[in-house]
Image (cartoon, rainbow, N blue to C red; front, side, top):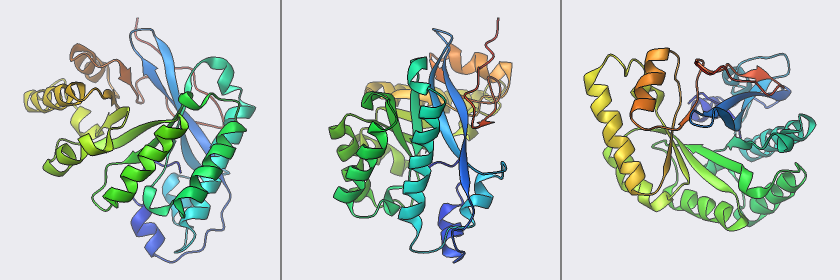
Length: 252
């Protein structure tokens, strides 16, 4: 399932029917060392470019699994149409484990959709948000199931809270995307610099590759790269583009 906003749980509880069409915008995650696109993240949009939040508001109770499957299928279909497999980049797709339905059935559908995309399975990254309402045991099972099939996993919206620090070793994702609140103005905030440096050390000690999202300025870019971050995402490089793979802008 692919979105940026945190509104899914509240949106689903509103009881609105899932009736709007959907498509995907793609935003690159860049490798600042190689100056290449490491992955393209698929982000849900309405067919006319409506925001993720407006699409989520059309999901009703009981249809979360259907919506998840449709988002995933759409992301894979567009990736194939755009020949993402030929670029050498990976595809990142967001999901929420609590709406994946029957686990074995869900994994079979995921695998079938992935194989139709022409992407090697280890170039597909399934990413979920670090949220307090996740069913921890189920989420661990989902992560393990994805890894067993050859996919890679990521945890988004990570902040060094006590709960996150305790749970992260159990999730064991390949990647962690740091909460953009930690990145915003990090170049001018000494406290944020210390917090970010601590989070990065913790991730590396666990063998997890960090991704800094939400980089919007040259100062933020310089600060995260100075802390040894290699994978970065944000408006500084490229905005999401509807049904297109975006070419990022690298600083000279």
